[in-house]
Image (tube, rainbow, N blue to C red):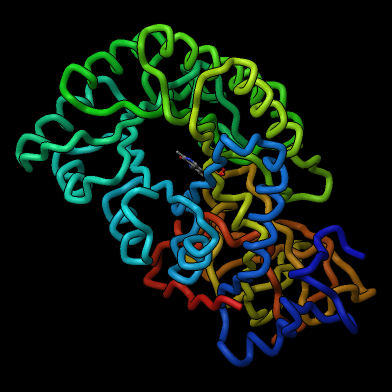
Length: 415
Ligand code: LLP
């Protein structure tokens, strides 16, 4: 059995099946390139997350706020709505899209960076939405927006703080600390020394501070566990300090970032241990919280999607063997083109365990050298018309796709 096989992806007679449908048949019926998502896999991923937090005491609600930036497909939003999830939205359009999908205002939190007054006005038109402030300085814009709209009822506010440490699978996805691993200054969150002042100012202005939020980064594996739990300690200590200063909170939001497994050799992030750690620290600290929140994107969606592409021809050049496919990375699975560290397993769905294997570079149809889905992968040698499946493409693929070279962004189906 291949390491990536499970209930969603299975191999039968040397062919790849997606939730029981042969990949080749889906490719023929809907055309390629094609995004294929599995509702059941999303639900299974949600279940594993809820199981990890199941030791929570009855009086503590565990909110799962889906980071819809990972994949805002309406069918996925509707599925997660029915499951009682919240939404982590990062732009006014994401807020409006969540509302359109049926999420009530009081199950949406808006977390914006470099936000304009107009952005706040658009979000404040839905006054039940919780607003997560990213900067002390944002309060001025928020106040101006509230005055302009003459909103009288207290708006629910959370503060995103930067706990001074972060982790991500690459420098571009570390979102806390002073600088990322490549030296880039980190723009997110309110620094430690200004958190209390931000709460005081919000209260003075008549806002209703209800939560504290942090998000360390994206794509954690087992190695990231020690930092992740250190950040939990910092968050709980901060909440204690706030409580002493008169700010008893409704919730602590620990953000997303955990998992999933993109490569065989990757050791998965120990989610049950992380959940147990959070629950233990929160209980010991007696903060009087009503809820804790996590904001998964990748955990729920990455493994619930694949992209099917078709091999147009193979090409030999200077000793390199290429499989030239009818899609480009930027238009379908942009992650490997954007992040050097991003890896997506590629499977020849037409002959999964074919015995004649060679090192193949899967090349896209865009005019850029970096437009390769995977370089020198040991694969059953593809033939013209073979269908290749790019795995782990349910999160941050369609949502980051572009029309570079005026190539189309493919169709999506939800099984
Ligand atoms: N909460 C906040 C405030 C976030 O900014 C993010 C992701 C999440 C939650 C969800 O993180 P996740 O559980 O999905 O790791 N484009 C990158 C990922 C960027 C994630 C940005 N923020 C990638 O393709 O790897």
